[in-house]
Image 1: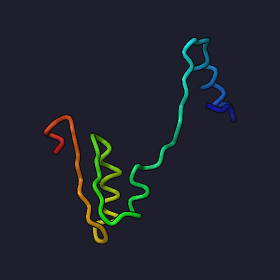
Image 2: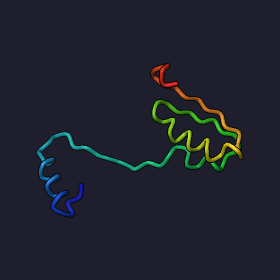
Image 3: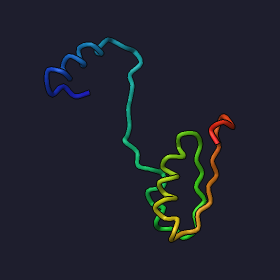
Length: 79
């Protein structure tokens, strides 16, 4: 968190403490399907909320590509 004003300064003060377990944050990461347009045949594999970028890829290329979807979810009620 970068201190750039009063609000972020206050947040920084509230969250800053001594720790022996530092944290690294990487990202943002692009969609795993960001290169999907390069391939004619696609097998998309998604789990849980990962269905969201998969559906976006399907909607973007459904008229131009052959697309198969494998979606694993925890609860049958999600289907």
